[in-house]
Length: 465
Ligand code: BES
Ligand code: ZN
Image (cartoon, rainbow, N blue to C red; front, side):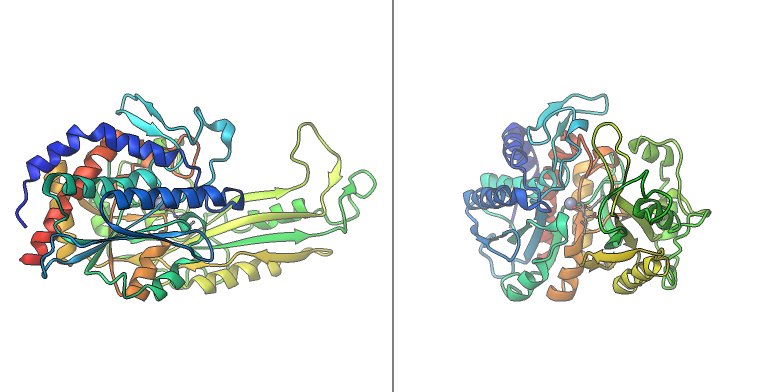
């Protein structure tokens, strides 16, 4: 299919305000998947996304699942037999906005904010993943408005449980395997190398989580009457959590590093010129803490970790309360690297706690679901098409990089659909994903749309080459 890239790109420019309005509409829906209190909003968001895709003329279904809905849309493309099918994935659910009091504006009332680094949109999900998924949906709209059709067949799959463990994903993929058959797959949920250099991510860490609750006394106790004579679960649990790392920052879970290798990608990554100071500044830090003898890039991309994400127990209200709580808990996740077995790590974590059970204590363990680390091949013509499309918009060579985060669907696409993913996204390190005041740069949004416009064209060319 012949196409006019300059016309497509200037159409994006001319309509960027409308694109932004459509993004704001989605950001106003608090689709927090992990908290059942938001279930109706998650559904409303799914219906809203379905409506947007129908508006583009796509055959769209909002599928019920055991959990949150899955949105699937099909577009026939240019109507030629040899057109390839590209599956596009994004997730319309978001992380909780808590703690609300640290937001400078309502997390679900998107604000356009000027900043020395460029204008940005601030809201929960502005980057992860509503801003990102709208880059490809708006790109598809552009193609339709300029050329009347897409240059390739397209399937759009939007998940509503990515931020809460993707429990319905695998059964859904298994039962819709035929409908989701594609030649290549694009996931827009990752970052750029820096503000001006786009990237394709080729390695993601995996994840496994455990919640460990230590039960002690039969009920909360007066700390004067009983303190010093009975188990204090908070004291005991915090000592055990403290023992998870040694003073070199190495995780003390048995067998934790057994299957960990030095990745072949390391040399390439080291040549990218990682700006450690800027990365730390994006975290509000001036020093890195972690495994001794490892660079920040290794610590976040190629080394496994164990982090407490939450710890609770006892009195949290205003003022003090002289009490010994009957229990205390910790929510932990480990980030995994290729070849680590998630279930083995989970078992190791549980054993770590059990081996340290204090007298008078009893454990309860919660948490399921685990996702291995992922590598995607770097020799496919689809990847080359994506790189070419990115370069034509950003005017600079994209880099291949790693990512410390996890995207469960990548492994599921590999194992269930036999499909490798192209991870193309426009997030920046300072976007504060999962944190208060999450933002997405308008340059990411605008050039992200243009990038997907160009990549769609390159896919069509790659297929006919
Ligand atoms: N978009 C992120 C993954 C990501 C994080 C990409 C940082 C690039 C930079 C994704 O939505 C995410 O946060 N996933 C969760 C998955 C988990 C809840 C199973 C994660 O990594 O914590
Ligand atoms: Zn995401």
